[in-house]
Length: 196
Image (cartoon, rainbow, N blue to C red; front, side, top):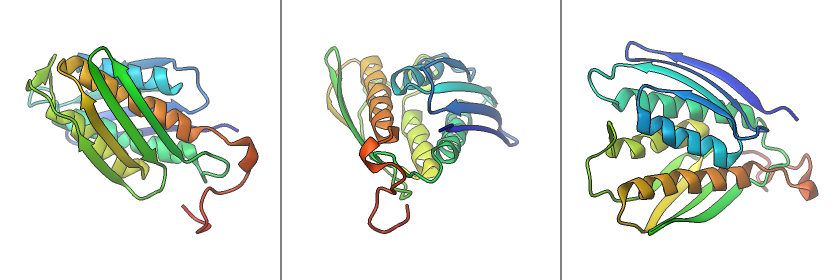
């Protein structure tokens, strides 16, 4: 099964081109103009075993908001397209991840019912050149456009870099689990409704 998508999103604020392969090996080529954001997206690709190419050009002379949000929108749309009809997938994923003193849990459902429950707290306004509040915006845009019910919860942590990196890695691991095909449910839709 080939689960891939290639999308572009062009607005007056950003230009985003993105390719994703759900059957990948965790390779990536990411350039958003925001170094710390690139680092987090690379973690996502590596730990979800997605092949991910992202090129984004945004109005960074204003701030990083439009770029972070539009990358989330485009990635969410690409994931939804690549996942396809969802037959045979596990659908649910959960991961409890530690990174030194930080601990983040992520639970998600590829339900086509978008929702973000974000319970992550920062004690600084920026990491690198990225406003920490924009991580919630990114995940909100991603969940909304991919149709994911997504809960990300901080259980421990004092180092802001560790906290957000653990969040991206936990999401990646949970997403990988949900995207996996279940050999016992081949060609079955994981829902009694008959639709997702």
